[in-house]
Length: 149
Ligand SMILES: [Zn+2]
Image 1 (cartoon, rainbow, N blue to C red):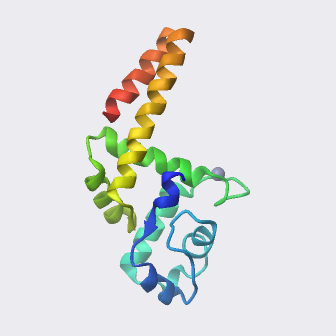
Image 2: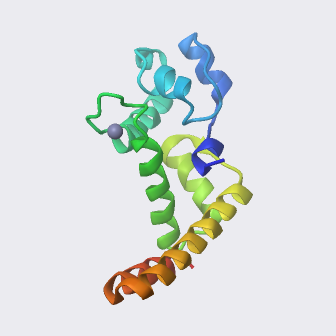
């Protein structure tokens, strides 16, 4: 399961009741993207929640794809956001705190940790391939990986 399947909406029950609509707890499930993040119920949310929802939409759902929000970009952008936080030196617990403050989302720190470990391993594998292929690419990947560890 991708890390984006393990990102959850905080105060899920409260938001569902404000919207008077049900949606799953998982932030990136299709129905949540439809109901909470692209639905027309935004005005029904309390101000603090609405701000967070709008932030999320601006940062992750800002593509022009016809299939939006089901085009895969929101998930990819969120993965980039997690890696960016890691590159800034944050650990799993701090990353979970930040996504809570930024977007009212939460995850289990253990899941974030596995995701970061997997990302580093993927980069290591890419680095080995690039070593065979071309020096510059390998150096670039190596630099990325060092940012994460
Ligand atoms: Zn898109």
